[in-house]
Image 1 (cartoon, rainbow, N blue to C red):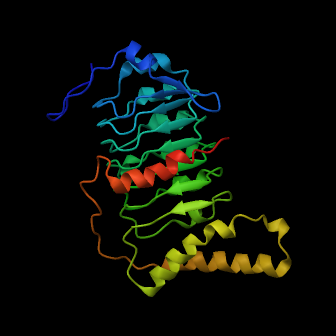
Image 2: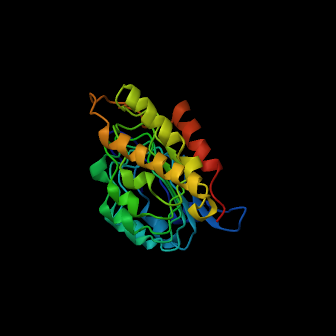
Length: 261
């Protein structure tokens, strides 16, 4: 039975109930869908279903993800958005088959992101939006296969240079963060928005003048990010945990466009 925490009643999930929640995706993958089940803790019985390709525990009331989640060695898609999670287990680094990770709309802080994230060498999409991150761990810069990163609605004042230099990055969402309210900040954010265009073309396909122009634009972006002045910290949606219209809109965009690799 799911544990009861702080007055919240958890729903009982048995192995048979979980087994009946397995769905076959359009591309033939096996997805265990336990979203919106009223869970207040990670159901240990699902560890017996660790051969699934995708796991959806979103829109529950789960507070902690156990180290044993690494037993899902075939998992390529993990959705944990809209829970009460404040840290990820170190063992997540062992889930090297992961391609998609959505941990948005939780209670994550920067200290709650383990260094072991840098072991997810195949991951393509990471959504960390709607959390309480005041800085971005530089370990994300080691994930060279990243195509999309969500950092919206956090407490960020700058973005590390190694994130913007990711070779395959096509989308970086940094909306609604407390970047300094200066003209420099506006220019910085505009430059971030232009990253999609800067990284869609290989250097070998550009003529000399065009390549130099892109290199100069990237250099200027890195200079602006290193010069951003600290601003007053302010909480953004500190009580935002359960899905609301903004969280639903934000996550729907990520969920509906799951890459078909």
